[in-house]
Length: 365
Image (tube, rainbow, N blue to C red; front, top):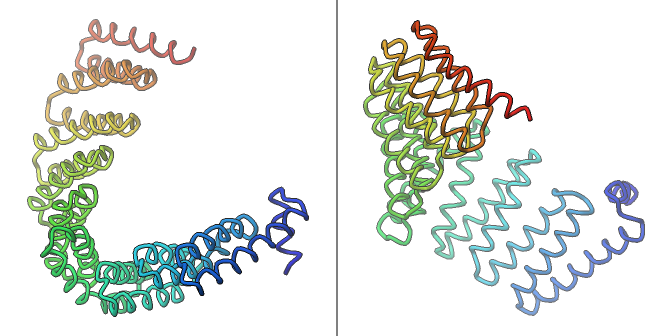
């Protein structure tokens, strides 16, 4: 085993002497951490374990950090710092889950949650139940995940009574929504997601709130309730914008536009597609912006409004050129020109083709 460890470390560019020195340093740090914990110096023990884990990861890889994270969590709990304990417990559980030891990860988090409950650290207890529920749902172990539904709902209601815990309430409701969705209680899932969104929005966590509303909209769309789905998509998009996540906002508006098209409301779809494209631009995602304007062009052509499509591409071209995105600017001018040719306006199209070649040459320099 020692030879294998040394071989791994040497492959990473360490000499034999460096490997032995690092191993000795890890042992020394762990002994110091043990003495510090016995002396009641729990934060010192945490720092020492953290230093030891960093060296161990370099020597043996990320999996070696699991033991150190668990030790750190134990020291933090003894110090009464359940926030730090949760962070370390989560790190260990995630690593265990990633290596396929889901049951060990759940057991670790379950024990932590039990101790949080006994010590009345309800927010950290709620995190434990949320983590286990999501882990089980992702592993298609729905029946086991549903055991946490009632507890999470009770905690969500408790947290919603105090402005300082709106965030925890929102996250708990969001997982309750996932659990309801998993057992096909769709109306209850939508209610839970919306409550999650409301509490997260009140907590100022606009990105998390937007995600909760988005999940509710998805359930409503699948339940063939387009009008309700669209309204929640709009709320979600606005919150993503407020959070500065313009790409997600664009994606949500784009989904709402698709629902409008299925519902036979192209004028509404046109408005949202245009907003979506502009938000992709704002996010610096010109590839998706172009794709969205392509979709918008098809809608406009079907609606007999090719002139508006030309205007869309010309505006996009100018903005892309200003941003030095010459490839997208050139293609936008070309697409506008192609539409003009289709409409029998070749002379007007020639000026745009010239612009296309000008920018194409510029981007090749």
